[in-house]
Length: 327
Image (cartoon, rainbow, N blue to C red; front, top):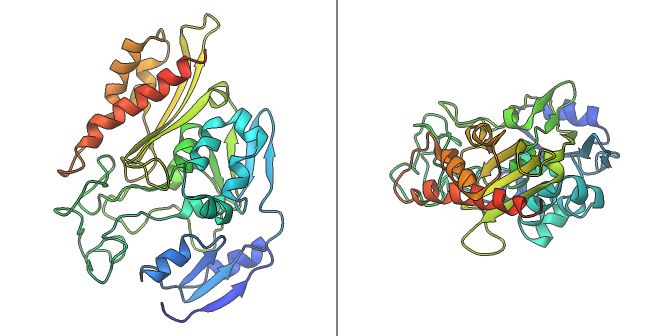
């Protein structure tokens, strides 16, 4: 870890000005930045502490939306009564992420900015070739051990999996990220690697995440987050799904459905083909399972991660059927 300067920002404006400096990185809960610095991936020349900026930890929920401040703690959002009532998938995604200690420290904005857990990315001493760290150097994962790697949204430059849970639920329900003058759909905030694997987020120099806004909807109120992993806790998803469901008045016809995938793609992945196949259809197990087969359209495996192509449709179907049982 190299030496760096430290600045405590007392306002959003001060944070933005400091964040525009070359080599500057923001510090909120520290659970991502400290990790990356210890393993030699992050080498900031300046650390801008935004954890003391007042007002950025507010959680405001109404019938039409939820606005969650960037400095709100993961555990506080997960346990918020109105989040649990109006956006249960968001609460469930947060509860299933990380350990209790990390949830009590990590901020919502920092959670969105977390970087991949690809072991090749996080071990520069043994694997210098990584296009996320050193653009143009290659991808050590391709041809390596790939059990945890992505099968959707990959490129010749990178097959690293996006590791988070919260963003999967946010993408399913068309949430936006507030960046000051700009607002972006969370889905657009995350970038697939293409030829520029080093760019994971559409955030510009001098921009700071101030809040996340989630539109309210009937599908968001009847929603769930299902996470399948190698062990029950403190583990990243092998495949996960955030699903929301709204039925017509007859209780049988699907009016609206929202589906996003985690653990299988280079970014939070919206399963629009499955949504389109189910809207207007009668809700029954056979229809759900057939539509869920579209989950992996366009998937490309790299050997050991082939199981995800079979697992993800089952996770999606199971999450949808779970919601149907509450009708």
